[in-house]
Length: 137
Length: 137
Length: 137
Image (cartoon, rainbow over all chains, first blue to last red):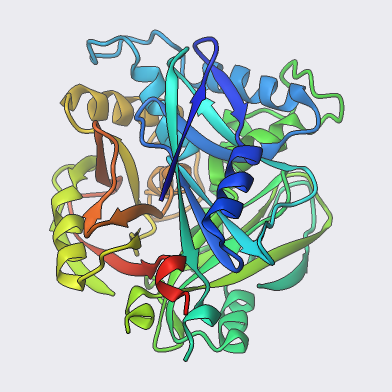
């Protein structure tokens, strides 16, 4: 497992982590299988979505803020309950296929680190998983 | 990795992909591990839910349309921002355990390809992952 | 794959399954890779979120009930359509990295079994996945 760090800006901030994960795959020497990209924080998430038009991620964060308002009579005393709720709705990890040493993503797909309670210094873990073909005798 | 194609009908359409994935597992010769079922599109998703009563998927799509309206002042110029938002809420992939050469799903579970901006010709990628037992010396 | 059972209490109930999964990892003898923690039910889910303050999970369940009301003109005759919808929003499985024989979770993260149509006796499946390093010759 490799650990990488990234810096988020603003309370909500989606950071394109595709290059970071791609470099980790190369460093790990993984040729065929998948990578598990895991976010170890409870007020952040990882998702895959379009990277070409920045308005996609802008619309996504605005919609999540509408669906899960920052203040809504929550009991959690730290005041960031909305960030925890969005973390579960978006998911704590993504898995991406690796083939020929390269991440297999669709034409418009990027891997996004989703900050919901920033700005903060955050970590991202990348674990290489073996393809079944590699494990065959 | 195997690539499969499927056709969706209507703007929103959930297509049962269980048979397609099950056939891919057989073709891959995977006996023990898991399959990563990955959707390479940013306005579609993959989820696992009930397949016995078609009203479950009907209720799910209606609820998602209510939670994420098709028009809501989005900035994304292509007009399909809602589809991108639903893609992140449902997830770009599912992983399913394989044992004895068979997909391990609960009694009522099916694997659904979730179209949010159709109708379109879509692709689905299936990657076999090794169980740790296979990798032991 | 190991199968574990757990009991839920109340219609909505989040049960901390971290200990159960951790014990399964030890029993499987997995030292490096990941575990796929899979829920085989269509009205339940698995998620990762904070375990220190019980109000986080309380706020999460209240927010999900607000976003997906129990009654909302659903067609599914069993009356538990909301539980199916929440199952897709939270996800049917989580994958967690294992290193040195231990689950790799962030400081505040716990693995939660999410009951949306209880109380019931439920099952949870744990499958060990090989790291790519293990599969190298």
